[in-house]
Length: 401
Image 1: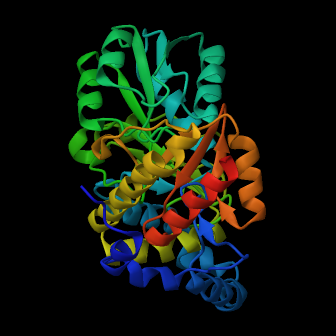
Image 2: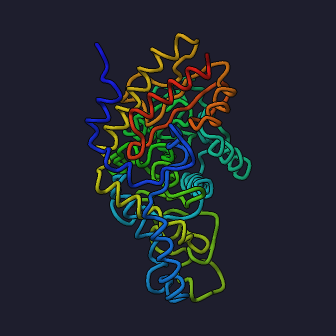
Image 3: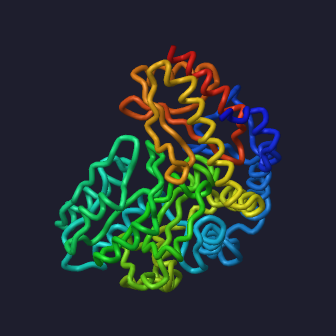
């Protein structure tokens, strides 16, 4: 069966109109790293300038009472509705992904007293693994490591063998950062709950690309960043989700004034604030939230299901080109072939990957390298064209040849 050409796919792309809304510069001919850092929207610069001149510069400290203090929860609710499948009151913008994962993981261990193990896979993102190692050292818990296949990820079969009545917490990435493996979140959640443990889902590599239904799936806790498919910029603040039934049980370990019951009383002794606000610690990063709102408006307009449909089509084209163009050069696909088990990126392994990626960057073709020998090709559906994928993979073939 002949695959459609990149030209035909672009002509039929229902989301093609959105590409013109993003900044396109830097002499880049093929940007294949939108899953790591998304392009900025052109309108964001205007909105940032307007905020600085009128809201920050004009309202000054009055802005906290007028809008800013409510922004973390209000924007969290929008994230929940647009991309997480979460009802209001369960999602909030806070610190970095690392800090929020730490808060949620420590809270989860405390919510399961008497249980002595945390389950995580060895191929999870380094921060997730390092945080679990630190929490285990702090709490005296034991880590039960899962070994996954290089081109796959955490399956229900692997979890079935690892999760026991000693497990307090399981930390899983919804989409694996290297292989792109998409976890069967509903099945994983059921299995973990059957063992009496809690699930913390890292959605950094899926949010804004893969539709989620966290409420319906029964996921306990989740966290993710906003600078990948949510295009909020380098170092943009992350978000946390806590299932409604657990919100009041969360006892996060970083007690700061904004997360207190009444921040402006400045009282002696900490009492956590009501609801999801208890996850906050320090002063909210208001400037960093502004691009999130711009991108959410675009996602709400395009629809997360349409975004996922294009994401699948982009990775399908990439897999096909990998087979026809890269495999003859000795490259191997290190990602699932089933699009139902794949997120928005693929990885191709080759012994010369590191040098090839460095060469491509100098040519304005931007994938990224992932150890030990992977070229990761990430596609942001609202900014990536099919022609870009084709040109990028053809350039990779020349760099590997």
